Length: 383
Image 1: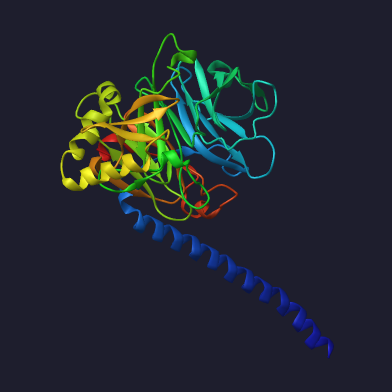
Image 2: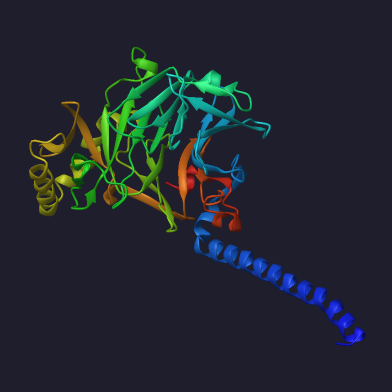
């Protein structure tokens, strides 16, 4: 090869590399634009009502967000979840000025908290963090004052007979519930119930009333039990008593589903859930009666649900009968489709705030359409 041809080849090589690199960049840009267009069109109802609030702390640093909670007295947000790698599951606090701090939790015995971080919620004095079989209790001031890298030790561990996939304190009630989806997330047999309409439910949610004499401000026994559909990742309660569920799993669409069991206040709904809700449907048709018979006979003699009378359902918890209400389609008043992997939700100041995990470094795809931010939806758009 002549020197001229060799020199020409050397000059052409960088140009080819540049063209290829430019084409790849253009392709990536087109993919991002296409993904955004697809997402915004598919979930147009969500994006037309949702408001972008702020970035989820740690979303680009290996944190996989599972839940969020607004702590009123501290005017800050707490976030729970787990890490992409092994080791301690981090917690985050976001202050009113937008500054975020990562810190960690320890069990009462001092060992590291390495659980899923599926739920966090706070009262004026305490913070509750979900763990296997129940939840950990902290002085909430310790979380509010933790510095970067600190380890905050729990003061107690409460067993409630289920491992919460979500928890929330709303209207003076502590809610804790489970996630069910076959084949990987199998509920105990006595959680499998048949609704009055004949649908299968296997999720369960306990509701604990506020109690000044109870441990950490709540009764040790649930005052109400709710039977839930599959794939519930989070819940909150609106001031009027309506219950909102975050329903999602994997790459499929998520849904914010709002249920109304009574026309009364949140407190009335808490006390009379079964009578005000399920009873009306149970007496509505022969099909409902047949479904009731199926539910009762299928669980006879077990620690499960039964109909105590023609219009009342109960669920046995630690040998005690507790009022049971079904969050079934009969009481569904709205269903808002949302992007995949919607997780915990929190009611605050007239809006429902939503956490996501699709933009974490574990899943990545949510980064393409801005899922790394907390969004909020006005309660009026859900009722």
